[in-house]
Structures are given as C-alpha cells and as structure tokens.
Amino acid sequence: MRSIIQAQLASTLPPRLVEELLEAHAEAKRNLYLGGLRLSEVEGGRFCEAAFRLLEQITQGSFTPLGTQLNTEKIIQQLENLPKASHPDAIRIHIPRALRLVYDIRNKRDAAHLADGIDPNLQDATMVSSVLDWTLAEFIRLYHNVTAGAAQQLVAQIVTRAVPVVQDFNGFPKVLKPNLAVSDHCLVLLYQRGGQGATFKEMETWVRPQMRPNLGRTLTSLGERKDLIHFDGTRYLITYLGQQEVEARHLVEPIS
Image 1: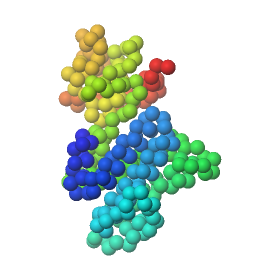
Image 2: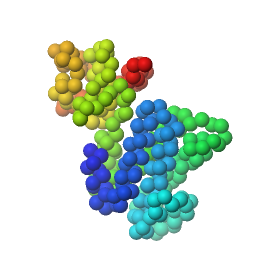
Image 3: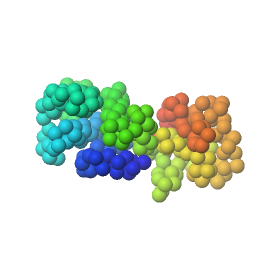
Image 4: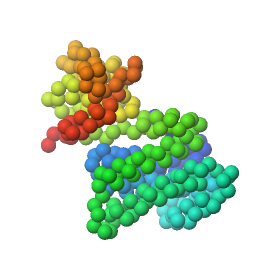
C-alpha cells in the first residue's frame, strides 16, 4: 500500500520529498509503538521538514534544498499571505499550523536537545503521531483524488505496527512466543496487521498447525463474545478494545 501511495504522490510532487515524508512517517510510528517516544518526535521533525518543502514546491514551484536549514516562520507567513483563491485552506493555513505544533514539541519539549528538563512523554508523542497521520491524509486527499475519509483509510493501511515479537519472513508474520494460547496468538497477529487485518485463510496459514482445528471458534469468540476483534465479512481486524488488551498484557513484548 505504501508503494502505491508513494507512486501516486510522486506523480505530482517531487519523488525525493515524497520518499522523505513517508519514511519519516513510518519511522515515527515505528518508534512510538516500540516505546521510543523521543525518537518518534525527532522523526516528526524530519516529517515536518519534508512537508514544509512540499508546501514550498506546491505554492512556489521550488523548495529549499535538502540539507539547507528551513526558515519555517517565513514559510508559514508566506503561505498565510497567499490569496484565498490560489490554494486550498489546507495548504495555506491548516497544514502549516499543524506542522508548527509538531516543530514546537520537537524543539521545546526536550525531544531533540536538552531544554527545560521536561521529558518527552506518551502524551506528546501520541499528539505528534496523530498530526503526522492527519497531515499525510491531507496530502493524499489533495493529490490522490480521493475523499478525506478514503485518504485516512489509506494512511491506516500503510501503517503497520512495529511489533517486536513478530518477525516477518517475506510476508509471513511469525510470532516469536511459542507458549501463547491460540487466542493471544491471533490477537498479536491482528495487532501487528493494524488496518490491513487478515482473512481467515491468512490467519489459518500463519497460526501454528495445532491451532488450526479450533481457529474458527477462537476468532468467533474474540469477536462476538469479547469484542476484541471485528469481522467485516472478509477480513478480521483488531478493535480498540483488542489493542488495549494486547498492550495491557504486554503480549507484543519479546521474551527477555
């Protein structure tokens, strides 16, 4: 999915900036899921630098070269002063202000350097992650020719949770906890899959052989009795309640 979005965006926007944007987004999410809150916010700053350059390119036809320090205050002011009819409000106002918020978190909350002694925390990192998702969704909405809702779904699909206890072997997610019960094994797999979910055939392939005879019953119980997963008629997806269950019980943490 990420390759599709990258190809679509790069057909209109500078490919190098699109690659930087998506790579920083992926790394920020990965670090958030792995508990690297400081690194997540640093990658948020990197995302902003790519996004600001995209805004320059969109509105000016050129951008500050990579490796050259950005004057973000100047860029934000220039964008706000553009005629209303020249570009959508998202380009002139909303995205720049959102990026400014992420920049302030990165630079003033002890994420990138020593500052006022305030440690980066989950609240800050979660906010940064949400802003990055929204910003990427806006770029996709504007330059992928889809609705905002469809753009958000695309963002969700390119975000695969970085789960330390799952190792991917050419598309085969192997859970590296041999003693997990079948229900927990399924939850870990679906947690890792995120918005992509999985079909019954995929789940049947990925679980251990001894888990397969009762897999259907297990998935039904997780969905209909416990609301930890949802079946949309084709794919199984983890619910918010399921995510909380996985995280509260530390199911995705590797064996120490």
